[in-house]
Length: 251
Ligand code: NAP
Image (tube, rainbow, N blue to C red):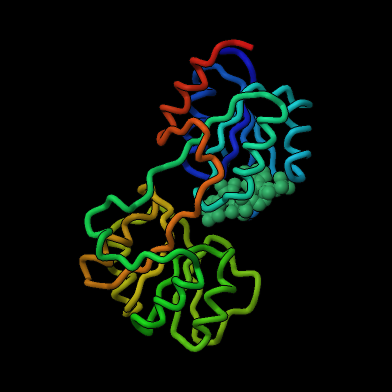
């Protein structure tokens, strides 16, 4: 396959795919939204920032002579994925979805409190205990703050929150991967009573689930949203995505 691959990124799988394709001699451009201050950068070409919706993305694909797109964005980043489906259809180029499996098959997942959205997660967490560990990211903190303002909450985020958090909340800035022993110590030190996460999947941030299970701490999990790429060819690993790109017919 010759051509140029756009990798919609912001995930470890996207970076691993860039390594695989660049190593195979492919021309790649990885795209980041630009939300994280100090992102982990992929190998190969890079662009940062929104495209300007479907028209902007479609124009980018044409101008940059992109021949294939791999949507390797986070399972909860549905806006960019929907745009990728439309823009690739408009331009007439192949799209692959690279998505890591969720955590629903992990041992113990049947005992977690599964909810459909972040507000439901906040309400459920509040009913289960009073020292809550929030690991759902920065973008939905306002939803939790509206429900849990009076609770003791430990928030773990990569970048600082964009608004002032309620008085009883503590911010911990960190980035995975995490180990089970460190997560166990953290849960113990902060006397956490409830863990809240979303079904991000992957191994980078999964240690907290084992640590919570070991300590008997209840876990609230936000289900993945219905993904706009349901009709798109899907793979779950970077190496499978690289194989798919490398075996596409030339065009
Ligand atoms: P989103 O809601 O799906 O996207 C909102 C807008 O941000 C898109 O319409 C697009 O703007 C821009 N955008 C998003 N991803 C982009 C990318 N890779 N390259 C260029 N523009 C992008 O996305 P989100 O949930 O805010 O996530 C943003 C990025 O962070 C994603 O790349 C995702 O992989 C990563 N991430 C997200 C989460 C999460 O929980 N949501 C967690 C970890 C990492 P235009 O319409 O202007 O093109």
